[in-house]
Image (cartoon, rainbow, N blue to C red; front, side):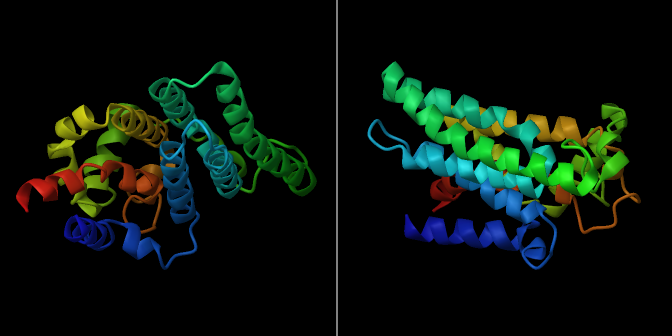
Length: 232
């Protein structure tokens, strides 16, 4: 309903990290919007249209240009695309056309980034972060609890309303298994990668909250409308 949608939108902005970072210059918010836009566009696909796939690939390519590490999180979107093909029972020819529509803008934007890196830093695979890109040596047993639950950097501490979503995730998964599986894999990859990065620890990264997990907020929030509908 409209009321549930409005309350969900207010909760999403007022009780998560999205509002504070909407006024920042960090690329995390851009990656959040681009990643969730790609997710929604794939969900809009049907057997006749190809522009959602092309726009999804464009969004993911832009996300990689903003933050190259997001290239590690493309697999859930590819899985969601394949699940959509199965749900729609598309022919192999249509699948190929949609795949090409998605991969072309993504590949072109990634190629542009590699060319830029080559001219700016001397190598296609070098960035302004330099050695920081290789600091993924923090034990997961230490890093994961810190980025999820610590008072200084905990995801659930700074975005507490997503706990409502987790409480109703089982119902959401039954109603939307493809979307649920995509969100779970996406979150698992983010937690695994950033749970091992040294700068995710409290005291080593001075920004507000857990900005590295900001792209997970809209995905973790997916079951909140169902929660509110049950209470309304």
